[in-house]
Structures are given as C-alpha cells and as structure tokens.
Amino acid sequence: MQNSGGESHIILGYLQDALKRVNLPYADGLYDYQIDFSIRKNKDRENIGARSIEGSSLRAFTERGWVYSNSNKTDPRTIRTLARRIIRHASSSKVTDRLRLPEPIKINRKAPVNRDPQVVSTEEKLQKIREIFNLARSMDPRIVDVRVIYSEVLMERGVVTSHGTEALQIVPRTRIILMVIVKENGVTEYDSTLLGGRVGFEVVENLTEQIVRDTVQSALEQLKAIPAPKGLQKVILDPGTVGTVCHESFGHGLEADQVLRGRSYLKDMLGRKVASDLVTMYEDSTVEGAHGSYYFDDDGTASKKNILVENGKLVSFLHDMESAAAMNAELTSNSRTQSAARRRFIRMSNTYAKPGDWSLEDIIRDTKQGVMMVHWQSGMEDPLGGGMQVVSKKGYLVENGHKTNPLKSITLTGRVLEVLGNVDAVSKEGFLVDSGNCGKGAEDYVPVGDGGTWWRTTAVIA
Image (cartoon, rainbow, N blue to C red; front, side, top):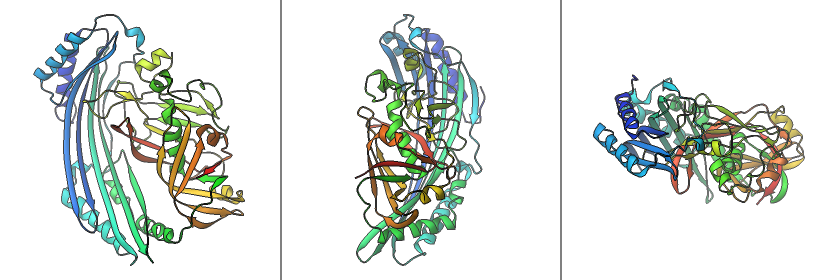
C-alpha cells in the first residue's frame, strides 16, 4: 500500500505482520497520526499553538469482549510487543459469531481541498487572521473586542484487519470562528460565526467582508434584544438548531451500545412513530466537505448514508460490529475513536434532517404568534429519559406573520418525542451541516456535523 502520507503504509505493514502472529478469529490494527495547528487572536494577545500525536493499537475480540493493546510508538519492535500482550490476554475461542464483520475494503484516499493548510505558511495564516480581526474591529465604535480562532487538524488514520481490510485515509479539517463583542449603555453582548468542515485553508477566504459585517450587525442587534416569552408556543428553529435537536436530543439515544444496556428511551421504538410525518433524518459519513465525514470508520466499515427516521418512523439505530450482530442489524459505519490510545465507541458522524416543501417566508407568514430560534449555542443530551434542552444565542418574536423584535438567548425544553411529533412545517431552503466536536463521557472527542433546514414545531420556552 503506497501513499503520499509519509511512512503510514510501512506502519500498516507492521500491523499486518502482527495480526499474523496473533492468529485469533478476529483482530485488527489501527494507526493514527494527527497534526493540530491553531491561531487565536483578540485585542490583548495573539497565540499560536501546534502539536502532533502518533500511535498504534491492536485489539482482538474474545469471549470476554474486546482486548486492547496500544502505544504512542509505531516501530516494529513496539508493535510486536503489542501483539504479545494481545496473545497473553486473549482467548482463541471462536467468537466471531458475536461480530458482524464488514466487507473487507482496500481504500487509500486523501480528502481533496482547494488549499492544503500544510503548504500555506504560518506568516500567510497570521496575515489573514489579522486582516479579519482589523476589518471587524473597524466596523463600529461599540465593538469592544474581536476574537478570531483558526484551527486545522490533519488526521492520517489506517485500519488493517485479520479478514483482509487494508484502509488508509488522510482527512484535513479546518475551522474559523469570528466572535464580535459589543457594548453600549452598560450592556455587553456578542455574536459569532463559525465556518469549517472537511476543507482546507479556503475556509478562511470564504469568511468574506459581508459575513464579517453580518456578524457585527447581529451582535449590535442583540443590544436591543428583549427576553423571549415563556411557555408553550409555536417555535421556528433555524437549520443549526434543528441539527442540534437531531444530534444532541435525538441522536445519542440511537447509539446501539446504549440501547443494548437499556440506557436509551428509544430502545423499544424501532419501527414505531417517533416524529411527525414531515421528519426524515439521516446519519451520513459521506457528505462531501462536512466536518464529520470520513471514508471508513475505525472498525474498517466503509462510510455510508443511513436513514434513521423515515416520514416519522424510526428505522435504524447506529451500530458497530458487536451491536450489529447482537441486534441482527446492518452496519452503519459509526465505530469511532479520538485516537489510537482510546477504545472505539459508537459515535455519530453527520446527523441531519431532510429538507421539506415550505419556504421560510411562508412558514413565518403562517405563524400568528411565536418565536424564532437563531444560532444554536448548546444542547443537552438525555438518552435515558428522553428530555431535551436546546439553547440558541438569539431569536426573534413572530407576530401576525412577521418577524419583529430581536430576542435574547432562548432555551427550548420538553420531551424530545413531543417536539419531533409537533413539527408541522419544514423548509426547502437553507440547508446546512454545521461543524462541531462531540464527546462520549468526560472526554473522547470526535469531529461531527449536524444540520437540516428550518422547522416549525410546538414546544416549551423556559
């Protein structure tokens, strides 16, 4: 296996040799190399950060479950030591009937970008960040600070398995965040814009002067915002907030390891209605340029587009090899890890809702009284109880079919299935997949994306 990604093909060869030594019914090896680079700038400081990690891992499936052995080294002697550790702790019992093995794949891919961040000089990156900072800072005297955060990660990851997979992918992910902080008459507010995904340095060039100006105006508008009305009412969710509902409020309950432990409110809902007929939802690691996209997951399952909810009916959970066998389900390519030093878990990639038939203008015109949530800020998961809380940075009052007063931060709460069941309008325009990072437990973060178009539902504003 040859690749422009340095010595990765050689290290995968070491791992393949180690799998032959292990000689168990199923074992695999994972190689991981990541380079992180960031620039942070505000009025007081300008910081540059860089780090890299490398590691290798072998694991085998036994009667007791998975046995792992890993190291931050990748030389042949270390990998042979990993194999000896696996042999000492693993059983040779035939337990592969407890795994649904993916079709062996031969993949050697580097995600294309317009401008490779690795060949853009630090000086050019700094210059662009300073230009964005100075441009935003100059736009209004009420601006007290501007923060620009640029980050790039180059992930080089390979998987080899005892049943024939040889897979290597090189995936760059680049993001930029612009935050504008304003103050007037003792009131301080802010707003921000985030661009990013499985893209290159072009994402910085895509942060145009108009986007900077819109971010400034949005922050200034918040200085006059009023509190949102409370209680049960019509709520229009922007695409980013819809994505937060799909991922945080709903998606975590679909992780089949949680379902098998009885820790998901959706465990008995497969094949049943969980949402309005207007809601169709996908989990899709193939979205071109999206932050959560990859060519194969960390089990070596080729990426794919999965239907989670179809016209309101739950049709699939998210699976790895073990859960798919336990539930007699298809693999969904959702086994992921932060690095070779960690275990693999069922995780989302890009989770989003299908566009509908309405225009946003018609949704607003059809709403006599309600609120519009704009610019998601956070979401809280409750996969066991099925509760939800989604917070947007700002919003608008909707009165007699018109968007009127700007609103301060809005918190939507209630039961997930009720909010999904109340969706009565889905827009055809405005589709996006936002970029983010998602943890499982206290740590173990992986890049993800979520999104959709505009929804209208009935929910409680706290």
